[in-house]
Length: 301
Image 1 (tube, rainbow, N blue to C red):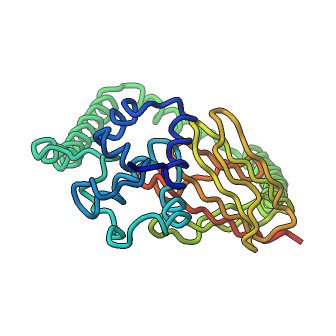
Image 2: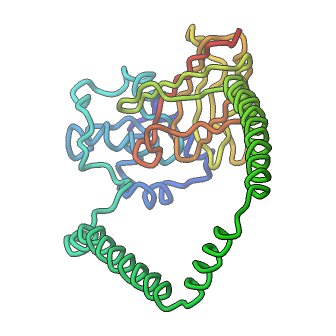
């Protein structure tokens, strides 16, 4: 007879908190119910193979909103060392991308060439229409004759007036140029004051961003489902840890900190805002569910 281990009890509590029965979890993960019971009881000897222990625990965690890597680290003494191999890619039951059939792939490859041919034909037809209209329009000859008559009637008075108009026009252009330069300078100054949030590196599940041109750093993490989130400062101090309910947010002021580290269990259900500016994930949250986002803050002087 087996009893719940600390790991099994943690998993079971998370499952019940989600309102999921073992049958519901079996449907979500496609793992047989008897193996789910074995995980909760710590009965790993019943598993079909060595690497299935880690694989099944990982899928169990993802289904109930726990960070599998954090669980493995916290309860590493309970998972037998003989089962510590990395989870093979073919075991993942979450498919984030669909393959394109070979026939559709060929059509996609030909699409740019087809569009190029259509554009060339369209341009040729447009040029032909414009030339035809110009050649067949009798008004063009009338305009040409009118210009010649104006040239014949040109006199000294007209020349004087034209010089005056040119001088006035140059003065206006100079004034407009000065105004435009002042506007451009103002735009440059505004851009210099605008905060900059940019990614500096990304690899695997880790991504790093740099926040500059601002003297405040207010972080807000918003839930679109029920993700697990852990938030630390640059010195490793834990400021928040837990599940954020749907449509709820967790806000922390990092103005007096140099770094924020956000550990996310379900990135596709999580949005991050920095001073109300939404952070764009550099790593697709649908492809990498668990992400570690670091934001380095350089306060504006």
